[in-house]
Each structure stands twice: as C-alpha cells, then as structure tokens.
Length: 417
Image (tube, rainbow, N blue to C red; front, side, top):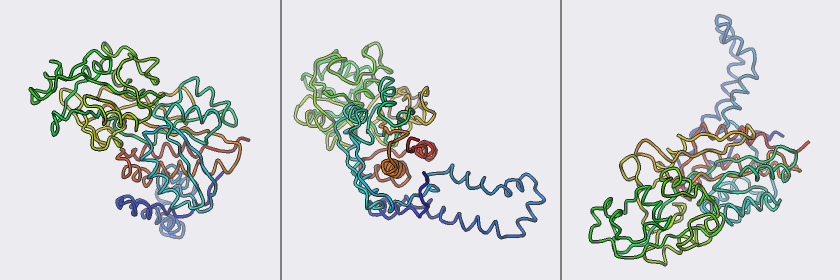
C-alpha cells in the first residue's frame, strides 16, 4: 500500500517539546517538487542536457529521480497521518518507557485519530505477548532469538515472519548507593564490574577497587556489596551480560544471558523491570545495579574503563559504539538485528550500550494494522521522532543512514496476499 503524500506535521510537535533543531530538512524537502517542475519546464536545461549524454539519459528517465527521492526516506517519505485511525497496541521493554512517552505524544499530535498503547512489561514479556498475538508490535532490548524468529512465521500473516528495528539507543548505567563517597565518581574496570556481579568481589573496600580509585582511599566503606539484577526476562540484562562476556570472559563465564536467576551466578538481589532495579538500589546502601540511564534519576553512576581511561555514560558516547557494530544477518534482508561491539579502541565511547528494538511483522492480516504499524514506526524512526525520544529519555538518535535503511524495511510491511 502507498500512503497519500502530504506535508509531515511533526515539526510543530517537536517544537512544543523544545526540540527546535529538528525541522530544517523538512523545509528543504518542501522545495523539491518545485525544483523538479522547473527542470521539466526549462527548455534551456534540455539544450544543456543534449550536450551531456550521460546526464540526458537520467533526465529522460524522470522516474529515476523519484526513485532517488524514495531512497532518502527520512524527510522525503511523507504520510498523511490525519487519514489514519485506530488503536495500535505494543508491549515490552521497560527501558523504552520514557522514550515511548515522547513518541506517543509526538505521534498522536500529528495522527490525532490514532491511540497508541504500550505496556512496559519487560523485553521477554513483550516478545512473548507479540508472538502470542496479544500485541501489534513488541519493544525489546534484545532481538528475536532464532526460535522466536521461527515462531514469528506462525504469528505473522504470510510466511516472512518478523523483523527487528533498532529505534532506541541508550547507555546502560551502573547506579550505586554509597553516601560515603557522595560527590565523587566511582571508577570500575570491566574486570571489577564482572567480579562484582559474579559475586567474586564482595566488599566496597576491596584492594582491587581501591587500586583504580586512589582518590577514594579512606572513603570507600567496609561494607558488603549488594549487586542488584533484573529478576524478569530482560533485554537489558542480555546487553549488560554480553558486555561482561566480551570484556571479562575469564571472570564472567555465563555468556550473554536474559533470565538472570536461572542462568546467572545467583546471589545478589533481584528486582522486576527497570524501575524495580532503580528502586532497590535507592533503598539499599551498598547496592549497585544496571539500568537504562534515562531512568536512574539522581543516583550516581560508575565510570567504566575503556582503552586505559574511565568514561562516564552519555548518549553521545553510547551512540558511538553502535557505529562500530554490524548486522547479524542470516534472516530477512529487512531485519536489523546487530551484534554490538563492546570493545571500543578509543576512550570517547561508552561500551555498555543498550540497543532496543521494535519488533514488527512484515505482513499482517488487515490493512488497518498495516497502516498503523507503518505510520508509527515511520514517525518513531524519523528525525523528529528520534529527537522526541532524545528529549524525553536522553537517548542517542540513530544516524541518518540508519534511519533511511530502516524506512526501506518499514515500507515492506503489507497485507498478506
């Protein structure tokens, strides 16, 4: 299906969210049709083109220009959002909760006849709900596993299954509760992080911690470390344990895991969802956890050892690690699951980055669902949508190249024939 072309109205929404920097390309693209018309009406241009055969061929094939514009979807692909109506249901990653608030507010301002519902039940629960047909899309901090992708062929219409769209990038922070060092920054190497969460380093005044925190000598308390982990199936857990597995494999020997209590080292304290981890760390002196950085509130967070230095979390630093990562491949050509590189070579990169996906079918049973999914995913992945999540959740906007590539995939969503 093709949507009617009408000027995207999201710029006004972004302005209302104090995101004034996000409208420039819209204005530029508005001039494109006039330029095309001028080219068609200018006889001088035809004369010039006759002297340049290669370019003349391009001009003679007007659709080629339209195809080129279609390959620049961030601002060229325009949707008549006002013509779409219905309710879109999603469920999944609690890490996306703050971003989803921004996405829903921005999208519903331009698509006033659409209601978007999202239940932040966790990545594992979101994928399970989606695969069971209880939602139109899932939010997940981990891409579909192989068996889940095979199951998606049964859940989705047709036989193409589901695809992963990486729409949300955010650092995973390591919040801690140590009033004794208030105002100071705690430095932790990958080996220390893995040792703490594998229950091998159990006291805050351990010599190994003091070695990389000389400024905290005499300040770190003689207190038991309480590592807090997710008790539910969590893509945040999978991202965090993947980091430890890549950077300290001799200490963290469990690999990248999603359910901690059945596959991890045991011990520590478990809490459900991102909010539960943050609440547990807040409540327990001596605690340390891992959580999407947008949701740790006023808790301090550790700086992480990278390339011989210590890097505090930031959206910009986390975004750089994604640029060094590659798509996993092996499924649909429109799938965008990636293998995150946790070993950056430069200290301007924060390596514990959460790449969170929206999981959607390539084919649905009805046109209304297709329209809703395509419209929302298009807006979420647009420059305005990415700016909205950055404003509401502090996430790192995906690059223009990735936005354009994702829209090629979104445009494939259709009704099963």
